[in-house]
Length: 192
Ligand code: 16G
Image (cartoon, rainbow, N blue to C red; front, side):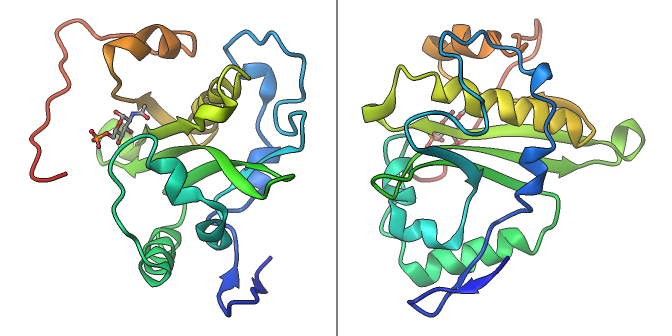
């Protein structure tokens, strides 16, 4: 699976790509206007795990459409990638590549957090969902979230959660997420 990239770094996937092929797409919850095969959508788009080489395919620029990223060097990216990969069965970053342009145009992350509660169960957290503004309206965000929700169930998480802005509540409801009465999302910000 790992080939030496021309720049000397191993070109490898963050997680085993077969995990995505084994998803039961009949479990997807959103309704799709476009009839596509979800894991191989039209228009030269490919859905796959994050690769090391995605540093050169605009992955971090895409994340900049979501929030602050900062200037991350290739070495820093490789180091973080390797640290994530060293935690097996934890980081599932799924990206969409436009094979024509060779650019990453969508991404979403599932983090599987191991717990003692619920008899050593795990909780899924959907994070950093972003589709390039040039590719909006193609139901790609839907596809990414459906994939991660389905994946979290397949990975035996007892629940999956996310945080989002009010404007996105309706979007996330279509996958079965609901606001929990009496529960609040709280945070403290230390820096941007
Ligand atoms: C959104 C994201 C969250 C991300 C945060 C970044 C989803 C479902 N939620 O809340 O994962 O970490 O934005 O914004 O994608 P921040 O920089 O203000 O924390």
